[in-house]
Length: 255
Figure (cartoon, rainbow, N blue to C red):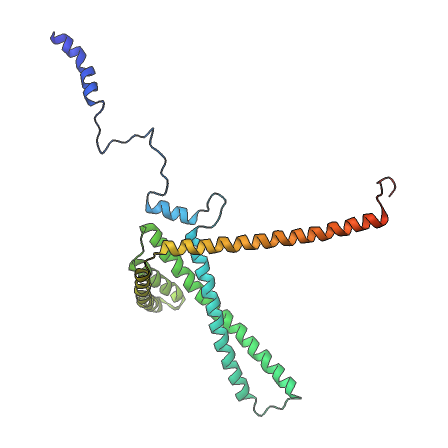
C-alpha cells in the first residue's frame, strides 16, 4: 500500500497545485500585448518615433510649434526695437545732411530702417527660437518620462537652457546662465501650473488640442490643393475639347 501511495504522490501533488495561483506567476505564452507604453523609456521612445505613417508625435508637434512661436515673437521684438533705434539714429546723424530731394531722403531712411529691422529680427529670432525649443523639448521629455507634469520639468529645462545659452562664455557665465534660467523657469512653472490647476486641464489636453489644430490645418491645405488641381484640370480639358471641335479629330497616321 505504501508503494502504491508513493507512485500516486506526483499525480496527487499535481492535482493539488494545478489550480493554485500566485501574484508572482506570469503567463509568458498567452500574455496579451500591452495597449500602450509600460515604462518611461517606452513613452520617450514613442515620443521620438513616428507613428504608423511616420507622422510627428503630439509632443514633438508641441515642441515645434513652441519653437516657431518663439522665433516669431523674437523676430518681431528684435525687428521693432532695432528699427526704432535705427530711425532715431538716422534722424540724429543726418540733420545737416543735404539730400537731392525729400523722396531721396525718405528712400534712404526706409532702406536704413529695413536693414536694421532684418538684422534685429535675425539676431533675436534664432536666439529665442533656440531658447524656447531647448526648454520645451527638455521639459516635455522629462514630463513624458515621468508621466506627469510638475515643477521639476520646468526648473530642469530652465537650468539646462540657461547653461547652454552661455556655455561659450566660460564656466562662470555658464553657471550664471543656469542659475538665471532656474529662477525664471521656477516662476514660469508656478504660473503655468497655477493656470492649469484653475482651468482644470493638463498638458496632455493642450498637446492633443494643438495636434488637432495641426491636423485641421493640414486637411484644409490638402483640400485647397485638390480644389486647385481640379480647376486646373477642368480648364485644360475645356481647352482641349475646344481645339478638337475647331480642328476635328485626327489620327496619328494623318499627323
